[in-house]
Image (cartoon, rainbow, N blue to C red; front, side, top):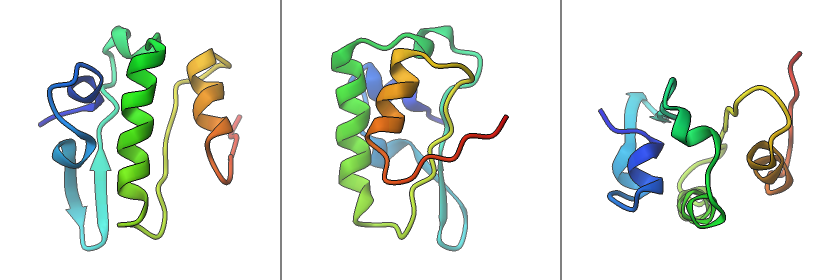
Length: 88
């Protein structure tokens, strides 16, 4: 129903856009096909980061899928992660 787009626009926080998928498993949709999400400003990135930090204590694991390539946005998410898994 909602995606990260509403988070970076400041309309909703990450808790509001997550959708339950199964017991102990929620999804935050990244907004596939929304080109605006491919080039976030530093302020928008910080909104997402703050939302992820707020959710961190509620989950054993947070998995973040990012776009292909090495954009500044992808590197910022990787740098803020405890573990990075690269699949080629």
